Image (cartoon, rainbow, N blue to C red):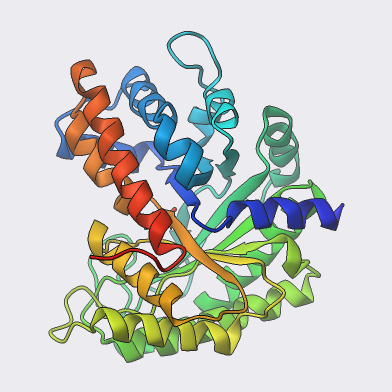
Length: 345
Ligand code: 13P
């Protein structure tokens, strides 16, 4: 492992004014997104949609530092035969790859999940590196109250269990160590879901336990913190909580929480949007960066909060490509401003 090079890539991923486009929806998830805009999820449509994003010159060259791809996409070519990875590189952004293989039910922990995909990961990473990937992503899912991928809120206050937190942290650290050995920067993503009716303080407590355990495992497994990026959720009210915390409260509590458990050696933190509206995701990031000074750079690694608008504008029609690109560039610019605390509502 060359740590200086890993650190250089990690810092580039969190370049001030830029952030990460999470375009790594699995086949199941992208189908859900396409269903909402009445587009059939075929291989060609998925390619056309992502090609539209990656050819958004303004967004990609000015506001996007890197793109997380799904396995299908990293091997795909644009309509003119150019590999999609090359489009990303030509725009000056870094290609990345989602390497987890989704979640499975965690035995003996009803309603809880564990992320899988460690088998043969070393070989897969070597192939992705050859194709141009310089960073990777692995997402662990922690659900407050339980319910897994089915119904929610069945487990009550005992969920998440320490078992779920520990096994997911262990897998995240195994993945991160394998990435660094393959000269790939790991994005470590332990996501505490915002589904449910819990308040912001419960989210804070659970996220603190999850992050503390994650960094403990990273240390045990000798992951170099200078060569990774953390992708956490914010401290935020559950979607169904009757009392929704204000933008300022989310910003202050998230910064306090991260300061309490993320070592300063970590070069950057890139948040997931997790179901927040486009504008909320921008406002929260901006408010946090207005708090400063902070020990790490804070930016975005948004999926839905960057793509909902372009998906709607595009709606699967070639005639709408320019409109889709405008919508994407707008959200990317707003989040770019938020990454330096210079966005104004
Ligand atoms: P959202 O911003 O839609 O949460 O997606 C980010 C992501 O990569 C989740 O793993």
